Each structure stands twice: as structure tokens, then as C-alpha cells.
Amino acid sequence: MWPGRSIRRGPFQGEGNILKNTRVYAFTALTALTVSLSGAIAPSAHGATDDGPVTKSSDAFAGSRAAKTVDTKKIYDRIVQKLPADWQSRRDAARAKLKIDESPVERALRSKLAKAAAAGKASANVIDPTQYDCGPTKLDAYVDSILANVDAGNLQLLSMLGALDAPTYDAILFGTSNGAGYQLLPAYQDSLTSTFGTAQRFWDVRLNDVQLMAMHGEMVVDENRLASTVQYMYGVGAADATDIARDIITMVKSDNALRNGKNPIFTLNAFAFTGKGDPDPVIRKQKDKMVFGDGILAALKALGLNQVGPKAVLGHEMAHHVQYEDGLFDNTDLTGPEATRRTELMADSFSTYFVTHKKGLAMNPKQVLQTEESFYDVGDCSFDNAGHHGTPNQRKAASAWGAAVVAYSDNPYRVLPSMRLATKFDKVLPELVKPDAPTSIEAYRAAAK
Ligand SMILES: [Zn+2]
Picture 1 (cartoon, rainbow, N blue to C red):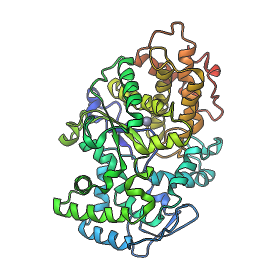
Picture 2: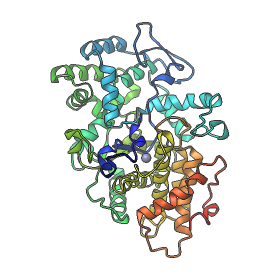
Picture 3: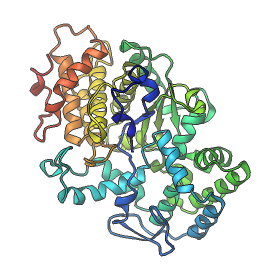
Picture 4: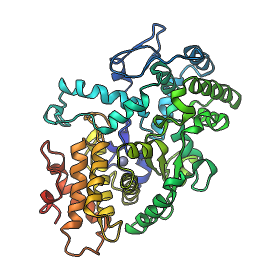
């Protein structure tokens, strides 16, 4: 869960950064779903207390049962023996502390369940899912495709052990912009670096301390790096962590479809991180970061959005850094899913404002449409989940509004102060989240003024 948003106007009002619990704001909605998984996957009979190891998969998960060279359940049991008795709560606590939205595979599973769940449920205080036409996007089909040959049981065991979070932990704890294991792939290096510099100069807050880097899934088969994240997650000693890392690597390597960590599922995200004001010195000393997973870049390419998508994502993540600097996460009365949805849709709007603006990337109308499409495709239908980023339609509407603010500006060379843009956004937000919110730029002519 993301508890930070409920703290707004307390006695520590002036210490917003200290109370600000959110550290990692991501591009896609990847949030915990241990409970809802039980409907999709039958736990084994040995009585695990949370997700439960998978012994069979249902139709809800398209993963196959690949021919395995090793018994991964046996390895899993051996790992659990080495872990402290409360390993699951330690895993969840580490995740909560770094505010890691949960693994992409869990999101993938959820998206398959969301529609069925939404049909029979209406949350009084959030939104009524039945009012929304929300369904799978091209991203869901992409996730299906990359998991098609993956052994579902093995993947779920890896997920439970936190292996799918490992690249994220690794980037947060050890990543640096010039570190050998964190370099952007050559195909993206120039374009993202240049866009990053433009975005840093575009906004009226200090962004030159943010480090741009990549996360590569191959770290999950790097014994030393994986052992370091295992140590952090579970608080085990170095020797046990190494043993556990070796076993996890064996599990990964047992399935060719995981491609030694190169399967995009390990890195299907991008995120903005800040450790500022964190009570934990290990987190507090970390530099502000913007991290691009190889998986999300591969996904955008597969969706036909390779030219524009990565820049839109970068704009979104930089918007989160603007929000950190402006204190915009705390500047709201909203809580839970609605609070997350607000800052996420705002990031979509800010990103589109940036890529459209003459002083930003000055994209042409066709590219702006692709930007809107990028946000549409990563929308989710997890209405009542704390990680809800907005539906595909809402994300597209937010993007269209951002473009409209540029299109209908009196002075196309003037960049609005970020707080002013945020205030305008908060005003239009109720329109953007309506079930029938329009998604054309023209429709926001009046609201853009
Ligand atoms: Zn985000």
C-alpha cells in the first residue's frame, strides 16, 4: 500500500519531505495483489501464508508449464529454509519502504482479473468501475506474448521470492549514471540523454541533480549483485544471501523463456526515485534517479511507439521529479487510489506539455498523438488499488489536456511555472476522470486557458 498520501496537514506540516512516504513513482501500475491472486492460482497444499506457491495454473494465467530441467519448487523450499521465519513480511516491508510497486507479472495477472472483478464491484468513495469502459490495451497483449512460453509456476515462485523486484532494488541501492551495469542501451543512449537534458532545463525547479540510468534484467543472474539485493530485502548474512542468490539464479536459468533475465518482464517499468528526507540513512544518501527498464523500452517498441514512447515516459518520470521538488504529492486532500491517480495523470499532462511545447521537444501533431497513445496503452483498470494510475481513457485525456495548454497558449514560447500548471491541472482533473471525458485536444480548448 502507499500510506504516504493520507498524511497531509499535521503538526509536521513544514516537514513534508520527511513525512512524504513515496519514493518511487513509476510509469505503469504495478501494485501488490496477494489476495486477488488466490482466485487465479491455486495455492499448494503445504500451507504458505501469502500468495502460496503455485502448483497449478488456471485459465486466468496464460503461462504454460514448460519442460523444466530442474525441480524449482524443491529449490524454492530450500531457499525458504535459509530465510528468517518472517521472510514474507520482511519482503513486504522492504518493498513498502522503497515504495516498490510490485512486480510486472503480478500486474499482468491482475489485468486479467480486473475486468471480471470490476463487473461485480463498486467502491462508493472512489469511482464506480461499471461506469467505465475499461479493458486490456496493447500492453496487455504484449505481456501475454512475453509470458507465453514462461513456466507460470516457476515465475510465481520467483515473484514471491522478490526476484522480479531485484533489478529495481539494485538500481535504487547501487545504480549510478556512470556505473557499468546501468548504462542505457546504445539504441536509446543519445535520444534519452538529449531529451533528459532538455527536460532538466525546461522546468522551473532544480533537476540537475537527477541521475539518468538503465536497469537491465541480466542482474538477476549476477550472483554478487543479486546477493546484495537479497541481503537488503531479507536482512540475511552474506553467506546465506549468496546461497539464496545461487538458487534463484538456478530457477531463472531453468526456464529458457526467461532468457537469463533478458525477458522484459523483469524490467517492464521506468521510475523516478528520491531518497530525500527518508529516515533510513541508506536510502537518504541515494541520489535522485530516473531509471529506465529495458523491458518498458522493448514494450514500447513492440507497440509501434519506439520513436515517441520513450520520450513520453521520460517526460512522465521527470514530471514526478518536478512533483517532488514542488511538494505536489502532499498538496492534496485526496487519498489512496484517487491521490495516486491525480499525480499520475498530472505527470501524463506535464509530459505532454513538455513534448509538445516549443521550448520542450516541439513535437509535431502526429508525434503528439503517439504520445497520447503511449499513455493510453499503459492505463490500467485497477480502480480501487492504491497503485491505480488512471484508465487508458483518462491517461489519454490528461495527455490531450497537456497538449491543449500548449496549443491554446497566447505565447507559445513561454513555459508556465510548474506550480501554475499544477493548479490548472487540479482544476480540470474532475473533467478528465469522468467516464465520458473527451480525448481530443480541441475538446480542452476552454479548459486549457
Ligand atoms: Zn508515474
